[in-house]
Image (cartoon, rainbow, N blue to C red; front, side, top):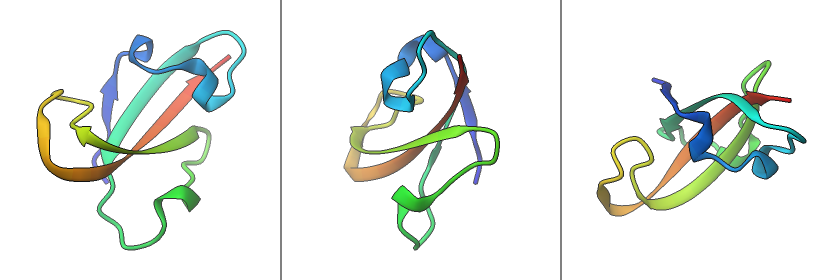
Length: 74
């Protein structure tokens, strides 16, 4: 998977279970055939989101697509 770092301010810290803030966040389009909700990235907290907009470019997608977010925080 090709991860792209995004601004930590673009994600809600509560989604990842952080008390204070998100320090780093990255996102990737889900291409795998396995269940996206079971994916883990060692050392990162992950969250899957089915969306109609690309979280990197904010462009509308042709169809809803799963994206995986991974974050580090406090």
